[in-house]
Length: 197
Image (cartoon, rainbow, N blue to C red):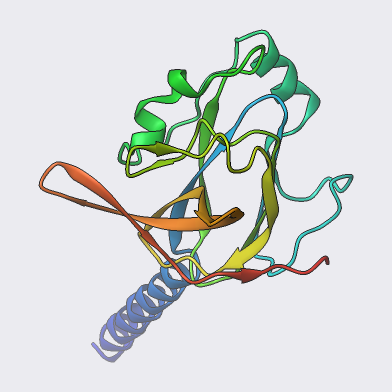
């Protein structure tokens, strides 16, 4: 009888330990999702887990746009979106209107670790077609925009990368997607300039 009780106690402790380890593992692998746009003539890389960006020649990071394969596919119009089921926004819903000459627009959605830094290196030669504010196109303001930014995504939150203008200055903006009543709103999240690694 003693052996049976000891065996049962060991089993209960093992189950409790396994449950604690499972919770700890789930917390360390919490995810968020991010949508980044690309097309021929644009560069876009995601560096999950880093608060800096590496050289464009580095094999690190997720290449969304700017690699030979993506550029060629966009050039010939054969590129397709990579979707994880994030809510649609104005930019993702009307992608075909953003196509350029020999430059088909597309997006990729990726899972990234939450509660850890993530950095992005972006350079678009012509972003004017992507962003219209209050019915005004910014095509005459700036044709180029880019830079390196870093932020810390939160678990279970979806993000979309875009651009914003203040006067003639173009800046990268990372927006949190908030869906309610069938609509998706974009809310900017804090970010900082990402240094080179």
